[in-house]
Image 1 (cartoon, rainbow, N blue to C red):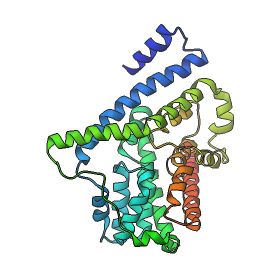
Image 2: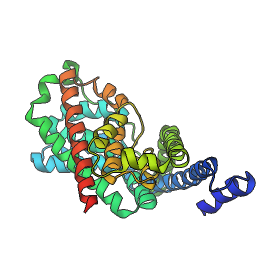
Image 3: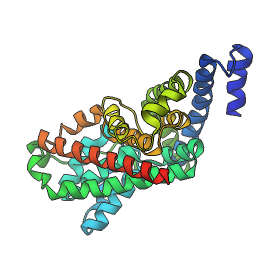
Image 4: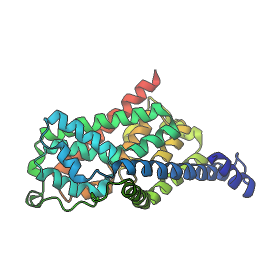
Length: 320
C-alpha cells in the first residue's frame, strides 16, 4: 500500500525515475513518511488505551521499596514502555529522589526511557526486521542496567543540585479520574495528538536525512568510510556524530534504514541510533538542571563508552 502510494506520487505523477537520485530519495521519503505515521498513530492509540492508568507517580511508587537489582530491572522495564522523553527527566528525577529511590536506579530509568519504547520497537520490526529490533532493544536494556550500576558506584548523590533535595514532585499531568472505556479512548486520542505533535518534526527530519542518504550518498563511498566491519574508527565517529543531533528512537529509525541499505555495519548503525536517542546535546542540557557538571560528564562518558562497545561487539558478531 505504502509503496504503491510512493510509486504513484513520485514515478507516475511527478515523472521521476527509480534510477535517478531525486527519484530514489523522494520515493524513500514518501513511502517511509506514510508508513511511519500510519504505524505511529495506530501504536500510540493502542498503547494509550492500556496506559490510561499509568502516571509518573505510579512509576515511582512501583519502583520504591524494592531490592536494588529488582528496582533497577523494574525501572528499566518501565522506562522502556513509558512515553516519557527527555523533557520529563527533571520532574521524574525529582520524584525518584523524593521517594528515596537510589540514584543508580534513577539513572537506569533515564537511560532506558528515551532510548527504548514500544513504538520504536514496532517500527524497527516493520522496517528493519525482528532480529535488528531485538538486538537494539537487548543492547539498550543492557546499557541501561550496566550504566546505572556504574553511576551508582561513584556515589552521584554528592553531585545532585541542592534544590532537588528540597522539593517534591509536582502534580501529574496524567488524569486518573475516568477509567471507563470512553475515558481511555479520550486519553488514547490525546496521547496520539500530544506525542505525534511533539515528535512529528523530528520524524520528518529523520526521514529526510535518511532519504538524502539513500538517494544521494554513493554506496561505494559509504562502504569505504563506514561500511567496513573492521573499521574501528567508524563506531566512535558514529557516537560523536549523534551528540549534536536531536531526535528520539522513532525519528532515527529511517536514518538507520538508509544506512543499513547502503552497507553500513550493523554495530555502527546501532551506535549512532543510541547516541542520538540518549546522548544528544539537548538531553544533556536538560539533565544539567538537576545534576552538576561532574555527574553529567560521568554520565555522558559511561554512555559513550557503552555505545562504542555495543557497536564494536555487533560489528564483530556480524563479521562471522
